[in-house]
Length: 203
Ligand SMILES: C[S@@+](CC[C@H](N)C(=O)[O-])C[C@H]1O[C@@H](n2cnc3c(N)ncnc32)[C@H](O)[C@@H]1O
Image 1 (cartoon, helix red, strand yellow):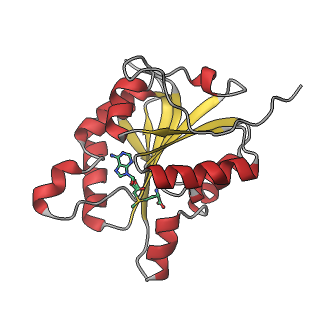
Image 2: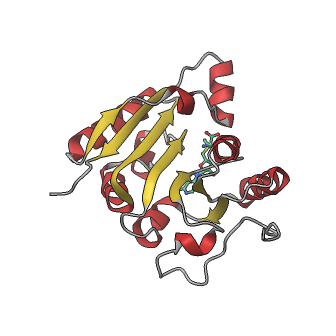
């Protein structure tokens, strides 16, 4: 028997210490993919619709954007999408269970272009360690940005980690455009994208 749809797909954990239990969040135990900084959720709503056999979690710190995606998910009747209001790095470091994710999507993270703010960027060498812990062996981080200098940093830190190898973004994934991507592309700014796959077996 189908359960009634939830009144909200925003999940509020009972505490901020214990790792999340993905199976407890969803109706069906399935592989889990995370999007960090999901914004208004144009990517996640589409991708979750296209992949009912995967559970998705959107992580966003702005309540207004989270609420907008919450309404969209309920309008679309998505059973495989949950949302968390969190600081992405905190969630990755403390709340995501080890080796629990098949993929992490990070699209157009804030570029912090001023030199004095560069250490606020989400994608740095510490992030590669967090991602390697959170992903299952063979799991992938998918990245996109409009910012060429931040893209170079992303490539450098993943390459230098020695934990990941670069892979092409599949066509099916690349053609799902995010809100910010549509805006940038509309202004003639191309998307820089990459994928970094964690080694299949750990030594
Ligand atoms: C430039 S927007 C991109 C949104 C969406 N990914 C897209 O491509 O349309 C960056 C988003 O990440 C969120 N964000 C930035 N830093 C974050 C962090 N440390 N933790 C969680 N969300 C964050 C922002 O609130 C914003 O919604």
